[in-house]
Length: 367
Image (cartoon, rainbow, N blue to C red; front, side, top):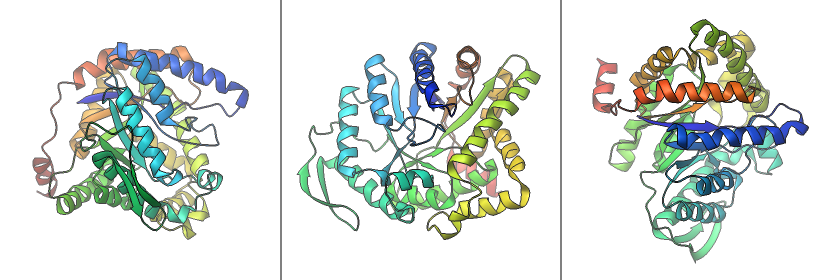
């Protein structure tokens, strides 16, 4: 199993604290390669302190120059917010500078505050994502930019510098809702799973995705990668208490940034899952949703963390796990200790775990 480190640059809400957040997070990122993580991941968000990395490709270019072998993953570049020409150029340059270490992760976005601030209609996210993703993927394989689509009219141009290494096995897309999972099969991307619902539901989505991928692409889908929020401590009770504190606070920030209980999902096309989630929150209350999220994550002693990750793998078949070890106002010393303990006592026992046989996994589920 491949094990990576995900940084989210979560702020405190006070703009005067942003410099400290970046200083601390970059110190942790510098530890990723020495501690043995295989990849570092960053995602794109704008306008709030929820996560403060508006340009993951820029950040990963910085990390490319500070590392030698670390893989560099975008989890994800939100395609509807960008000109696909610029995305293709930025991806190519980073991949060339890093000697082929970039893993290209895409997404279609969810935050209304971000769509409005970037002046992109949220209703168009699904169609824009598919059109843009196809333009970029084709350009990365052929070296040619060209489109006569609904949203993007691009005259034929060469992509220079020209890509020299295929992205066919290095292409992923973030997906939570069933509608997004189906879209990712259409564009031929592997799935980046950010857990927000019961793992059995995710497993069902993955079975649908694999079947659709097989039908559309004529080949087996790549195994997904899972991102998990980690609280690892040698004292199991302490870890559980800290998980309630830190992971719970993180999901409160998720609910605030995305307005997960908001009525705007009722009139927004392409976000049917979140319409249902908003209804659930209204009926059950936010505390129930927060508790559910905590239980989806990885916390406890090193042994408990390993057990939890393997349990997730047995359901969704991921061949990679990306740990988020710093979030929700953790001070630097605590976050570093969390990261180091995970790296020293959990990661070495995950690496020998073989990839899942999906035919066998799906057969077990249907039996």
